[in-house]
Length: 197
Length: 342
Image (cartoon, rainbow over all chains, first blue to last red; front, top):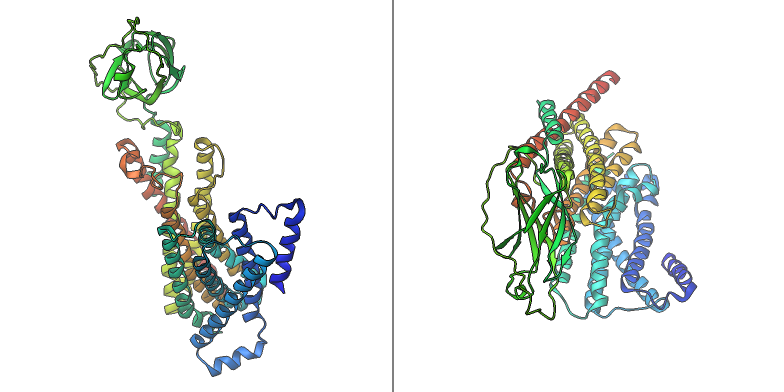
């Protein structure tokens, strides 16, 4: 619903002046990743905020913190990747679909969704310990998400521009993969400290 | 100790003059077969000084030096030089861009790279007798100023900012990694003292980061023309400052002391990865206006000559000592405050 309405907002905003026909690839990819950014922040914020107070104690007795964070990471990963694919579908239906190189773009979507989900899951865990403040999550998470957005827009611009796989694209993909490995490892190590009361 | 070093740096950076150079040439381009009188605006030269000795100017193309035909001193910093190239000669030149080299007894040798351009004529005039003669260079190396900062185009006097802007970032990174060590120690040992250390070093790092941004902005206005340009290092620095401002916001929003210490330490460790990504990886991958990136010459190669080094290394040490000094005062203050509360 969130995705759909934000795409609609963009559609109506762009329809003014007919600028939708001449949307440049860079603007397209920036808009696309911003929609995914905001929708995933909203979705992932729920993962720690919506839990009733008593349930954490219940979890605490039942399972280890590593198991909990792994489960949350995995659920959010699936959810965000699904969300990104859905946004891509709606976006290409309503706005336009300039993508040429589908394999690269799909990899970008999966890596981007993964990166968003891991980062915001950890941030939501931290923010939930600091008094369930959704604004705090944005304040903490947005500076950290900027490098991710830089690489994602570069990669999707490459997927739009040319059907070939260049060395630079490959290097950006490898960097994103490394980014996506480091984050859950850090989350796994640090979550026990965050969680303990 | 650090005060002495910094005093030395501040005094040195303001007292040491810039070495002489040529800042402007009028006109910028010449055509063959006529003699031009070029007005050269120089910087920090002493043409009217009685001890100036013989003033010489050459126009250099490839490895050939062509002496100026006639020199007329207008003022200490202005000189008129006559120069012309024959059209029969234009094809034998190695380059149509002439470097301008000047020499006198007081100022030593100074130069402007590719200061003047020859526009080749399409119809060489065979009747022209004008030829620029190759001259022998007799340089009297007689530098009166034993210490002077190098004269660089675009940078000019702002080269002194090297001693302020660059060490700021060294201090910030040093303090950030310092605080990382204490965050890890806190999570391992659980001693509140480590939390205070890590918090206070972030505060000082943030102050230095903001100073680094401010000095950088002044420098950018003078050299690149705007306070803020789209450059990966600038954006990275801004994001780095934002990350650590967010750290302080996070600390402010938790009341319970132990919980605050633990969560802040966790966030600190998490964010340092991204900070390192910004500082070390992204600027290496993209072009930057800063030296040392994207084909620009690196700092150590020839940007830093011995006169700059004499101040740059003490400046780094001095600023780092100052940073850690402020940090230790703040940390001790917090420790005393904590003791009073107990």
